Amino acid sequence: MDVALRDHLRQRRDDDDDDMMLFFLPMLHILGSSSNIVREKKRRHTSKLSGEEHVQKLLQGHLKNCRVAFRMEPEIFKSLASYLRREGLVRDTRIKVEEKLAFFLYMLSHNASFEDLIEEFGHSGDTYHRHIKHFFDLVVPTLSKQFLKPPNPNHVHQKIERNPRFYPYFKNCIGAIDGTHVPISISPDKAAPFRNRKGTLTQNVMVACDFDLNLTFISTGWEGSATDARVLRAAMNNGFQVPLGKFYLVDGGYANTPSFLAPYRGVRYHLKEYGEGRRRPQNYKEIFNHRHAVLRNHIERALGVIKKRFPILKVATFHKIENQVKISVAAAVLHNIIRSLKGDEQWLEDQAENVQGNVVDIPDGDQSNDQGSEQGNNLRDTIAQQMWIDYQQHRSN
Image (cartoon, rainbow, N blue to C red; front, side):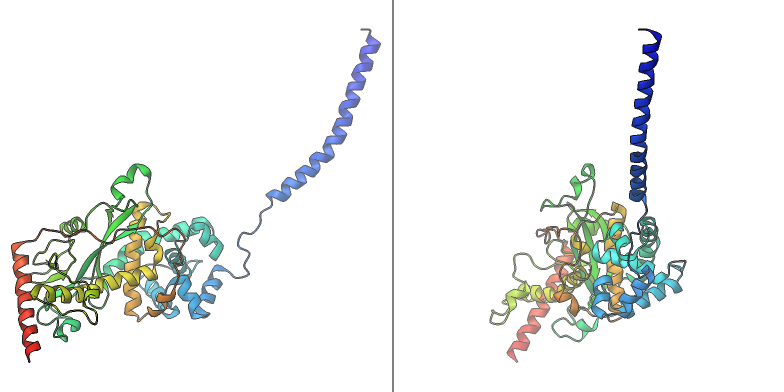
């Protein structure tokens, strides 16, 4: 190939390259402009209201909006916020105490994720992580010491003292105890102990209440495979105490002892069995079981109220396990605070499961426990037989 031909081919190739660049440069400019458009930040929270204004709107607006958002009335919300501020548990920063409380209550009331909170209140995920962590780490444990207190052992509750069906037989009774299962989410390698007899993953939570439906003790975190009796034994080994001469009412899944009085096994006692038109009790065991069930029903009512108010207790959550066990404590504390401030419970009856997640199938209760101490059986017999004697005398008059 001679020199002239080679120079000619090189010139054509250079010209072709220039033509290609003239074509691609405008295209690259257009694409670059498009990518800038794609990368342009868009505001995620488009509401005209700030998070603080949104909270105030809920507190000052229709009563139902506040109840649905925070599961309590506005005046109770405000009282709780004032208490947290006064005690120094939550402080005003650029975000006020009311808004921080709203974050936690909205999460608890709806099983809301950080993404849900971003959508609702407009702050960053880091903001919610920091404040929710503060409630779990400081506020919930501190409030539990203040608002979950054992009953006064020297006081006979008026529901017992003023009712001849219960007094003097249950004068030393200070409350009722039950176990309830709360769903959890946990990694597969740790799940086996938490699988209950229904096959779902839960923690077994022990709860005690008084006859005003206030919770007086809660023990959380036990595996779903653990029996109620085992959880109770563990609680006693970790500080739960029953004053000498006093007792709690328990169901048939617990051993009958002087401190934990259970019904007679194999004897009818469910409240529905004593409805209108049904036969009256036929012996001392039946009358004891019936009256025992009426009083012990307080714990079932208390658990019913708290699970209606906070249906997060019926679903698994996204939190790490150490915070999942604190959710039940938080719900118990808030239940007591709301009751102490005369919060309404009737509105809960018509509420749908206003929570994200699938409701988990959980066990109803443990099978009957054959164990019992001689002292416990003697105490139960003494109470039941005196109850039967008085009942027969009253019937004959």
